[in-house]
Image (cartoon, rainbow, N blue to C red; front, top):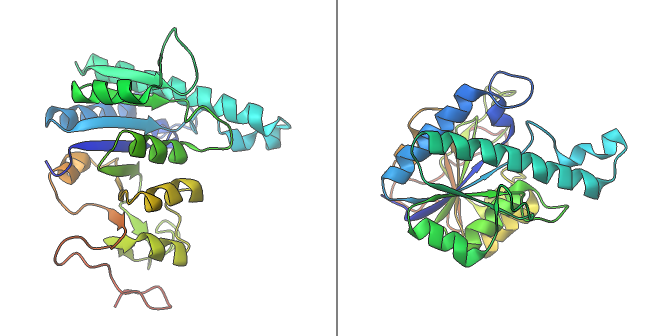
Length: 255
């Protein structure tokens, strides 16, 4: 396998599937199956999942709530999703541990870096819930920070699109996908990969990010096998011969 240890970032919204709210059982089990196959290769897998299918902290102001209170509510939403993923994985026979940034001892272990790394070394899938346990930080930031702390090789951001584009591919049919791109190019082009805190953490620690379509069966396994899937964001862009990013002119067209 190309990577020894990965941090997989999943969005809470993706768990809704075709629903308007909550957790779609078929989508949850699809993700669990993908993670099971990845863990079976010997790759050490850690997961951070958002809570947007239940509640987002940034919604607090719209409801007239305090932002800090809203962020803590969002953290609890991520714990619910993490528990659901843990149950789905264990149903498939995968050994897991759920570590939380908040103290919820009845259902989660407290996050301790050395304990997390030990679980990974023993082949357990480690799920990080409740973000970093502090308000004003997104689950993207939590994913970046935890990946750095556990010395992951890469952050794999599973989305519903197959990489980073020059524009929103769902709105612009002429949008061009990058195969490789540098951190500096992402910032210069103002491309939406992660929030700035999360992105800066990865850049400063030279931690590559791969954005890929998690909803396509087998994509995670292909990534771990070394196939060029999605978009790689790194310090130098292309890391393999022939993997140069497309040159994009001012119109957004590749040439």
